[in-house]
Length: 359
Length: 151
Image 1 (cartoon, chains in turn brown, orange):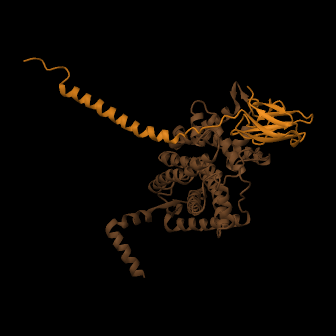
Image 2 (cartoon, chains in turn blue, brown; image 1 turned 60 degrees about the vertical axis):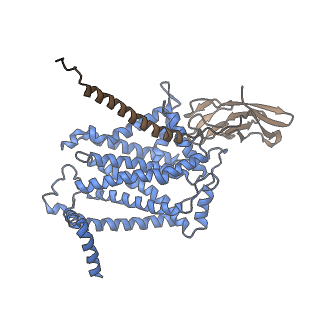
Image 3 (cartoon, chains in turn blue, brown; image 1 turned 90 degrees about the vertical axis):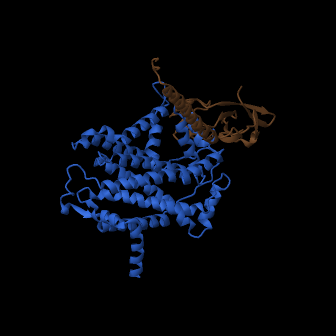
């Protein structure tokens, strides 16, 4: 058996020169410092994404993306298909944990300033993937075609329509018409299972390639892994094995959540019913939702929601471009402003999320 | 021997080709993009022009309650006040497109999405809604309640 394995390896090696790759893998290391724990969250996000791909493809075998059949097909998956309830529940739970892991990954990179030169492209691709993760969440939320998802989509797309000039065409593009209908469902289905995964895969490829090529970033003031063997561990096998152990734990956690807290399906969407009391979006949109509730109808002659949307848009843009305006960190100096802004953002998000939760 | 022209003929020929090729390229890209963009824009569905709909017999509307009826492809909220008077409003919240409901306990028209409130004449009185609800005309023909567009 071992001989056969060696033979196959030899056959491939002769053609593609695996030794270079193995040498590279052997030299790769992960720095050990007081912030090392954050290195795991990128891998965790990746693992959760892979779960989404696998369970997503499984759901795709039974799901029907139309107004008449979407809700019923998920009912079918959950009640008739063997383990269908489990697959759907895992897909929903892993989606939420994916956003959470990506969020932790993003904030840890932000606060350790790992986006600084030369890793600007890694940060940018990461931020784009994060926005895509939210888009995945938003589009996937509609697919069961239930009451909550119907109104969430109405509100979410109407927010886009508030934008001056581009708003209306964008709204009609997203909704496939003026209103949220079965045509919107078909469109979101296409985005969710084809457009977004395609773009995400390209970005992920670039992101991972850069991480491999440039190695792990060390936080300012914790450098030295390159020269000190005590301050690093080999990527293969030491780090990879720790990573895999964590993945295993997370898979168990998801299984427990999916079994003991199965994801509900709710009521089928009725286009001519009032929005139900207590309606709320997914937790990761809650802080923006809650902000919209507090904004008055008009702020200085401008519609309140437009002010809110422009504020979040601008904040998101500034956040995404942090490697380009934070020059201090790239020079190896401390930049307290970045920390205060980040801390402010985190506190705001946590506070508004709690308020939204309690409301 | 005459002076050579300031622009050699080959230059102007090159410029001509540049314009020709550049223009063709732009036209080619346009010819590809136009159908793609046009395809992404949903076609206008023919809509049946609705001017009025029948809600039902007056006694089917309980005093102090509201119901949503289908007006073409828009929801319309029909309310019967405690006094017995019937009023109708477009049920689409002017804030972010949710569907509103009549809350007898609060004495207002309420939107569950962002806690917007309208009084019983459709005026936005609290929360984020920027404009009042559309008002519909209520016609009572014998015992039948009809709702019509306000002209």
